[in-house]
Image 1 (tube, rainbow over the protein chains, first blue to last red):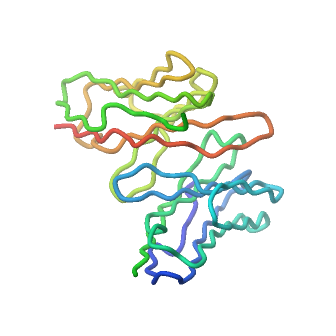
Image 2: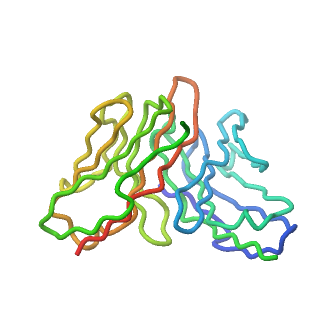
Length: 111
Length: 115
């Protein structure tokens, strides 16, 4: 079942903060976050695991509320390079072999 | 090498043609994926190979046929496609291990147009 992302789109000025939310009606083992720029491949940002562990390799943060099956991605002091479409991918089976992606949140950062 | 390489980058094919998409990675990842992405939509899972065995087939029409010749290569064979199959086809890989979860590395995709 496809997770629900909100908002659908957000426009920021450089330096402003944004929060992108992802919620699922199913119990989740993990939530992945990816960013895709126009005409490019999705790029991995972060994994949040059941039990609270986080794995990522960029200067972003995220949370995972297991009781509510919700995850939030926090983008602080946004830069122009943050522009793109952010997708959450949820794994309700374990092993992260079957990710279902949300519809995406389009983030635009203006100077 | 931290990349997934897909070829060709663009492909135009007729509805009676047979073509193949190729994907290669040398990161030692043992899971490889095919996703289909339409414009302004999220990627949709088509197939998953885990340790060179097909582990997930998301009820994809038989005109799409995946193949995993070895742990580094993944092919998608196309035959008798329809115009609605036009899309960006993304390959991805990850490193599944018991008790561990890893992010996916995506290739830049093949943009397919069926005429």
